Amino acid sequence: MRRLILLISILCICVSGFSQKMSKLYATYNKQQYAKCIQQCDAALKKKPEMLEAYYVKAIAYFEMAQSPSDYKEVSKNPLLDCLSNLSILSSKDEDHEILDEHNDTLLIIKEFAEARAKKIKTANTSEAQAINQRLSSIFRTKKADGLEFARIDAEAGRYDKCYAKIERLYAKSPAEISSGSDNYIALTQGAILLAENWMFSDLFTLIRNYKVKFQGNYGISEGFKKALLISIDTARTDDDKTLFYDFSKKGLELYPEDKGISYHIEKRWIELINNSTNAYRATATHERTWKDSVLLRNAYRYLVLAKEIFPNNEKLTDIEKKLNAEFHTIPFSYERENFRKYALEAVNTWRKKGCECDTSEVVYVAPVPTIEWDTTLERLANEHAREMFFENHSEDVNMNGETPWDRINKTKYKGTTYENENGLNFVQAMKMAFCVGYGYSFNGINGDEEMKNVVDSVVTHWITEKRSQNCMKVMTPDVTHMAIGMYGDKWVFWAITKYEILLRKK
Image (cartoon, helix red, strand yellow):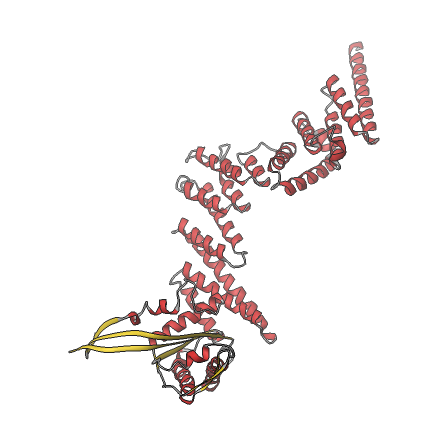
């Protein structure tokens, strides 16, 4: 009994001593004597290493210094790192986290401050940012680190090359038949996703390409690859010009050409994009539309073109295009095409027969010139170029492949071609060309042939009367023989050639 009382007395004395010592440390801290407080903590720990709370007091003293580090250069080169280092030591020694839990509110303030600092300097000082994140991880980790932890820290610090190296090494070293109970299994299901979430898309595609086959028999890891791929595609969908969305969609289908789930997801996202832009254009019907409104419709068509390149012969997309053309009258309806050709030819030949004044920078009178004929090959070329101008929102004679009108003509029979018919062997070639583009007129909202004719007349009249332009002279070029006008949306193309055609040999 006496021995038990003696033991209790000794414990009480020790606790009392600890309490007095800690009170002294806190008193110095509260007086804002931070350098002295740190010295006292070091002395206390040297005498009594089991006084773990001294690490906490030391840490918060360093944290106060971190608010104005230039005032404490002689005490610490980096007070924030010193603060986190002491908390890290405390975390490793305080097995039950009693001290850390007691001061949780203060620790969260320190954590928020340190994370903000790491984010701010992750590009300018990646090594310090990584050091901060590593210490935070060791302090606030509540479970055993997985194989991705330090890769995640590298990503947060902006050290993306090191992040990828760690993740790639994880997949390279793990066996293909790894079981779900293995230490790194969860990391392997999440590694690709970590890359996608940190916008490391090029690295992600390389990782999937290199290890997709190796882990194809493992459902969890394979699904991790696919989920990461879809995250990258959905992220790229927010890109303004959709170039990345287009590229990532194609990469996704290249990596998983037979996967219906991925194909459906990509198709669905493109259709949503087309419909969203179309609906936004529909909503502008409440006011007089401007060119900004028309861009919404052009975007819908542009997305449609890109989607059809990704999914050629896709019936859903073909149906969407037909419905858009019908709703917004972007091209003549099938039953209007013959009259469209008639009105376009009449509009041009009316001016050619009567002559006109052309303002090329000075006004020049052009006498009447011979009428010309319609040509179906030029019609196809003109419609194709008008369609591209509408989808890509440009009004240039050079197409997106860098081809001039002559380049495009030289892909047809008019490059100079021999052919046989009932008369014998013939030769045909385009010897001269006139080409001009226009915009701002459309069939949207018009009804009937008369209204269509008025629009066509207005387009041709604009080319004739446009000031300081060569378009009038092009329409009035005397020795062209054949022409066509193509249109799509509010984009128009006039194309004329001198068609040289002779009979080389009779039958």
